Amino acid sequence: MPKLSHRVLVLFAFLFVFGIRVYFAAQHGTFSSDESYYVLRQAEHIKATLTPIYNDPLSYGGKFVSFLPTYHYIIAGLSFFGSNVLKLFSALVGASIVVVAYLIAADITKHKYLAVLGGLFAGLVPAFLKTSLNSLTPKVLTLVLFFVCVYYVIKIEKARGGFSLLLLFSVLLSLVSPIALLLVLVLWVYSGLLKLQKLKLRSKSFEYMLFLTFLTITFNQLALSKLGLEWGILGLISGVPSSLLKQELLGLSWVGIISSINAILLLLGVYGAYIAVQKWSEKREVSLLLSVCIVFVVAVMLRFVDLTQAVSYLGVTFAIMSVYTFGELVAYIKKLKLRLPGGLLTMLILTLIALPVLGFGLYEANSQAEKAIPNYEIRGLLWLANNSEEDVCVLAPLELGHLVTYFAKRRVIADTNFINSKDIEERLRDIALAYTTPYETNAIEIFDKYGVGYIFLSPRVKNRFGIDKPSYVADAKCFEMVYNQTVQIYKVKCTLK
Image 1: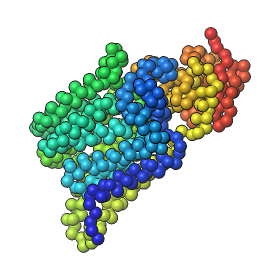
Image 2 (image 1 turned 135 degrees about the vertical axis):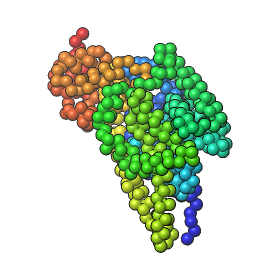
Image 3 (image 1 turned 90 degrees about the vertical axis):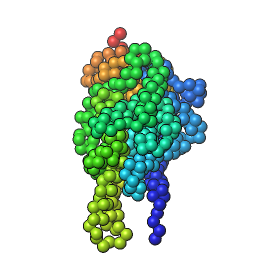
Image 4 (image 1 turned 180 degrees about the vertical axis):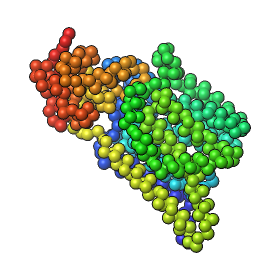
């Protein structure tokens, strides 16, 4: 039987991950993330006016929104072909990390066949599936472009060309996301690690590092020009509220963090890094991958990125470094000189390692697909769009903020666009208090503060706050149930003013 080319195998791996993403996304007509509907809202505005929404009257009661709109323009163009094309695009971009991770692993380890397994594992990192499957988010394209840039940095470090392509993908990354700033930090940390080993950064890499530093700061400063008058480029840091980060950390134990990467993948990656570190002079590339890990751990601590996003980058990095472990394992098996045909023992062991990784990936893919926005929530929000005052604010939890602004087209107290948002912590506390307080006066005081005219109550909201309904809505004089299906909507009729 002829041996399959490693190029054919990586194609199969890509198609497998792409198929998983398409299959689970096709199970539901809606997207799984609240952020997807913010992207759609921006895309629809771009289609209508050719410009994104910068002064958003609905977010936080009205504010200037700072973001890079390149991804939203792409979605606006693709949306002419329908939502199914958008889901295919999301699946295609997400699955492409398989090829990118394979290219990096094959280049740094020289194990082309084993690198296919590393690429497959990268496509099945649970945290990455959680943030990207059945979702429209620039985070997916950002992660892929980030590792494409890492690949070309490795190539120019080995004097193999690719400098022009590196510049091209760096420009694209800088246009899509401020994460390009973290790539700059990765390169500076990488330079420092090389100095510790008494190695020098190649001149082309140094030129690129300076170019990328200037490029990302310039692009982001232009994009955040209004915000930059007050905070400058540092306005991007502290995007994630500290209370949410603490909630993530408290709600996600070490077991949870490890499972978000995949325990097997974590062990393989850490041991792979250990193997590579034993040969610093021959494995400069591992310094670059370790720099990625260092920077994203620090980025979480600085609240530049959320925990799940950071774990996605760590998971892909560990998947790449796991190929070192596979190479060591294969070399050890060969030393045993067992009389098994065609490397049967090697294939058996690698299969046993791969099966749990595949299982965890499929489980996470199914879990994420099941989080698709339920139609009954959409029906309730559409009712609000047709039956409520245009300038009213709707009480809804943070994770439903973009759904309210997209479907109901009404103001919200808070959503996940944290940058340039005032009093985020206070707003989050007020939302929680408004749903859970037993005191009517406390609730009405909050409603007066933000101009809340309607209370949105769905099964997700009830589960989020551990309530059946706010106790104060029993007062029919102040609260009228105006919509009663799976979702309940109450109209606020009283004020303390």
